[in-house]
Length: 356
Image (cartoon, rainbow, N blue to C red; front, side):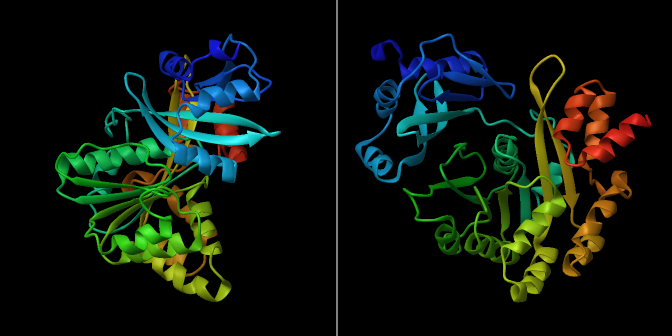
């Protein structure tokens, strides 16, 4: 029975069903994620041996050794005529299990994503920090890829990406890309950032700002004349700023607040919601730093940022997630129930939807 399933055929089905992920876990049949929901494929229930036979065929000897030592591995793989995938192998109850996420080979443009017009202005900045945040699977990598694609089509820049693993691979158009894989091309995010200063970058993408060293290096790069893009697993602008500050000790925090107040250009916090009639849409909250916002960050009044974002959204270009979701509900793009379920301020949203 182990021979009846072919990993390449399973990954082909991800593409065929327009799914985002494939899961192989023992004691269950293979499952794929379509529009955010898991769907079991009508195939035999897997056991550890079947998964091992299938999944090991995609690993090099070095990767097998790493997986056997650490019991988990992250990597990206291109399968000709099928597509590009980000893979994670792990162990569950002693058995090997796998999660594959499809990475589009065609890089979307900002127009393809119906991105707000202001995104095209943000990427023209010479320096500063642009953060895209949200839970896993909220389309952060896709938004960043589209922003870098816009730079690639319009500016002559050297763009260094540091990722674990590299997801979207850009073709050089006007810009020059150096893609770096943590683990194979560099030891760590922090190390790659430290050395990137000697690699003459204009733009740096950090796949994940997960520790103090990486955040410090990102802030320094943003201050010293580089445009830095990064991601965090946070749900709102205020939460993002607090998460960065909280990584540091109390006595370091005033300096970090001062650095953030001058270096943050924008924070895009997004969630992917199911659309009425199928498919998904990104709801984006957008904070753009202005003198008032910078002042609140510096003076440790982050809790007041939200009310500042609510003011004159039309002139400032800022958007709260609540406003975006109300717009989606009014236009019948998403259901009221889904809007409330995915909201970072469900009580506020429910109250405002009731009064409409």
